[in-house]
Image (tube, rainbow, N blue to C red; front, side, top):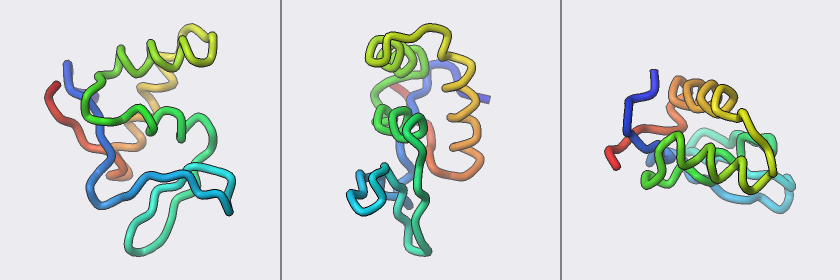
Length: 91
């Protein structure tokens, strides 16, 4: 469950970056690398510890001229938390 008012940020155990060789965003960690699809990369790019879920969704919807992204973003962030890719901070 996503904490109310909390802002996701990349877990300090991971480094998020664009990897030209992979043509994708990746999460690097000591044991390896996770190659992200475009949607995951766009969501994680906005997980800076300063934006909460509504702000992330609003930015994604504006950037991609889309609506109704909240359930998908929420589901991805829940999965990312389970994988320890992100943690939560208070705004």
